[in-house]
Image (cartoon, rainbow, N blue to C red):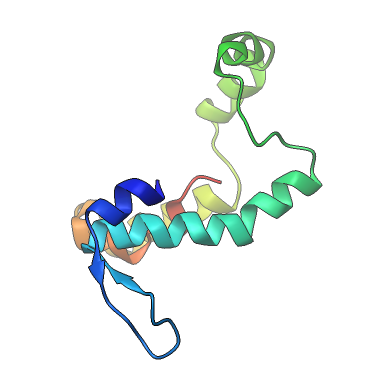
Length: 113
């Protein structure tokens, strides 16, 4: 990821980071999110024994084993993410919540993790 980002970035030295780079907003957001994950979510996942590398070939079998639980979740979504998304739509209305501005306001809340 870093190699691709460097191709699209430019020098942007700052007092706290003389080697800092600037980048287009979308790229900047993805790098910030990846960095936040590295220092927050990844250590939490490791503490729970979750793998760093995903065996994508094993996913269909795992989903088969979880099919009933996944179907229940799809039919009756619950939890803090669902509650937050539902409240957002209820408060702002479907159009505004789904707009680019509405999505940017809740970008951090909707990141998979």
